[in-house]
Amino acid sequence: MNWMPYVMGRSEEIWGEDALDFKPERFLNVAEPSLFKYPVFNAGPRTCLGKPLALMQIKMTLAYLLPKFEFNDSLGHSGAYKWTGVRSLLDIV
Image (tube, rainbow, N blue to C red; front, side, top):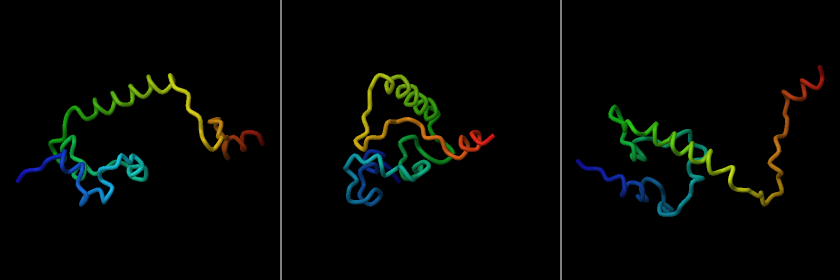
């Protein structure tokens, strides 16, 4: 038995007809893709020991790079936080 992560990442049987399209939104409503469906770090009891390090490096890189860019929302949202119920209750007291 043999498995090939490169081929599995492009398989229409796993990802649908748009498997070759870059669509990060396919993971938006999923907590984390199945390790058996997307086995870049292997799966089961022998997962890659470098996975936590790789994910930490991604987060650190984003934390470093994102402040250097300015993002504009096409819908006109300012990006300011809108206080919800917790803040409203604090204003009452």
